Amino acid sequence: MKRTYKNRLSFKLTMASALMVLMSFLLIYQVVRSTVLENIDNNLENETNKHVNQIKIEDGQIKFAHKGEWEEEEHKEINFNPIFIEIVDKHGHPMDKSPNLGSNSLYFKPGTASVNQGFNLTLNGQEVRQMQVELLTEGELTGYLLLATSFEDSKSLLNNLKTVLFLLYPFVLLFLFLTLRWLASKSIQPIIDITRKAEIITKDNLNERLPTLKYKDEINSLSVSINHLLERVEEGVLREKQFTSDASHELRTPLAVLKGNFEVLIRKPRTQEEYISKIKDGILIIDKLNAILDQLLTLARFQKGIHKNEEVDLKFLVEDIIDSTQKHNPARSITLKEKLENKGFIKANEKSVSIIIENLIQNALKYSLDNQEISLVLTQEKQGICLEINDQGIGISEEELKNIYQPFFRGESHALGRINGAGLGLSIVKKLCDLYQVKISILSKKGKGTTILLLFPSAIIQA
Image (tube, rainbow, N blue to C red; front, top):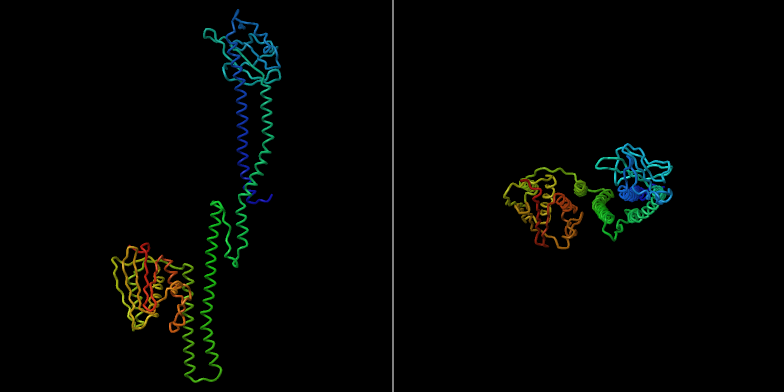
């Protein structure tokens, strides 16, 4: 038989059931046997009570007072529920006995006397149950009364019961196995359905989902969890496809321009000024390609979670970024207002936090005029430390705000031709903010400027 989970489960349940059935059969047998012995002992006890008061002593001999009792059928016959009676002295020597004993004698156990507890023995080839009772005269032990009755009918009953239970046991086990196997098959059918459905789901049909069950049990929870996993995989694959498509587009355009410039140059001889101009254009395009590749590598690195947390002085880091930015943009005005009540230390990766703040400041510079000020405000809030970045630039429309974090998205790209960029900055910023549970909010109005709020949560703030 194939060792499937269904068969293994059925076998284990059958073994457990077999033990329970065996214990039940043994209990049934013992209850029946105890009941039979108890009934026989009660009968012997009744006979004892009847005969013990009919015994007398004559000339040192213990005898029955009414000899007519010996003529009763139960004392003469040996085949129909016979009662065997024998009187012995305290040493076990026979004194008198019922006629049905003939030349046989009952078994004497020295020092044994019990009114309600018998024992089995063999008499003339047949099994009987015997009881032994003390005979007292004026409080002194003078002998024993031995009573016995046939145990053959009871023995036959118990043997038949034992045979029936023994023969019934394997059939019960077979029935249990087949029943449990059928129940196991029905129980794991939902798992089989889930497996079959999962086998046909590939990268080409990730939108397919596993069936859920009517009952909210563990198997349904498994199906729901796998469906959630498929949703995440599908989202990841779609993002990867979109990212690959966008990256290919962004890289293909500057490469096409670069190739076109070179093809124009080699068509005919050019002046030195024309060569220099085209070479400068090519250098700008290469710089743009390098910037795109750097951002792609940064995005990929943080998607893999490559980071090391450390203690970062947020105030000092912001000031350092502002100083560095102004050195490269001396004509621009960038101000910082600091309203921290405590030290602004957070537990994060300094390079990651720098990328967040630098990208946001660079965006503020790119999308505002040279005479417009960029202001930053660092404040202490109940929920953590808030960094506010304000510009007075071109702003972002409500429609564009919905897609602002998508890789390579650039709102109104035709109007932004003068602005360098690949549309990856805010995508990187959002992923890093999610990594450190930093809440980012963008408030903007077209033509009025943009305000970006970064809330560093209390969970990463160092006391």
